[in-house]
Image (cartoon, rainbow, N blue to C red; front, side):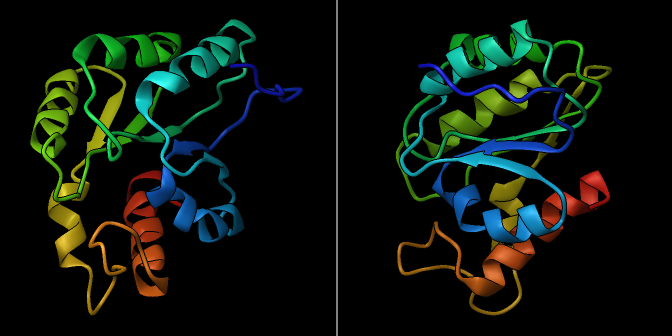
Length: 161
């Protein structure tokens, strides 16, 4: 996978799947650079992260929300995060979805967040149900307008945007 690389490091880079894509407009309005795609799985993002890392294009912070669309492994997560080792703040959201792999993915993400590291884990699995009102599409995963604002606010509570 090849991606068009930016000319300089990107602060507030948000990388995700269709859940993040739903909130991309709000996140962009708040100053995030969003790279999100429907049905995206973590393993396909690893080469993109490697390219960005080799070109020294990661600013601070980097927000990642992947794992909704299939199982992940600790090895894939480590490969995804390796190019981000010098980024001061890597913010990851775990998975809120009624899928067979969700609990396992959330455990792998939780295990990777260690004291003193550069990772901040947002527990989207616990926070999503707290969204006031009706925030989800019929599948209970994707966001409607209220959910998109709430999702962006949850990220903003950590990043300050």
